[in-house]
Image 1 (cartoon, one colour):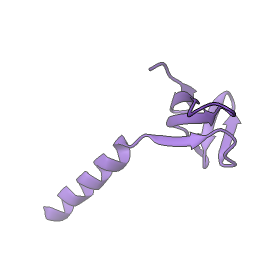
Image 2 (cartoon, one colour):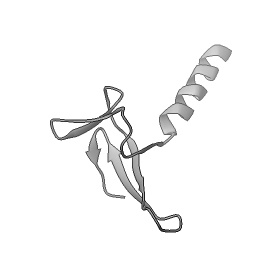
Image 3 (cartoon, helix red, strand yellow):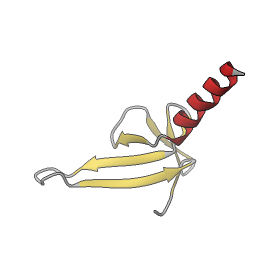
Image 4 (cartoon, one colour):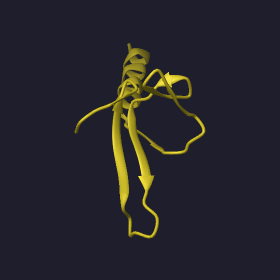
Length: 70
């Protein structure tokens, strides 16, 4: 029972974390209109820092390889 609870806790934390990847990452690939990261549909936030600005970042949320609306 204790092992089951530990496994469930680990799965919960890994499933709830929001992956953040910067545009230009070599592991990103666009196939068939969907975004993949390391050969899996990307779920998380795609970011891009804007040069010559103070902490300005473009953030695009994705779920299952498609852009979502926050």
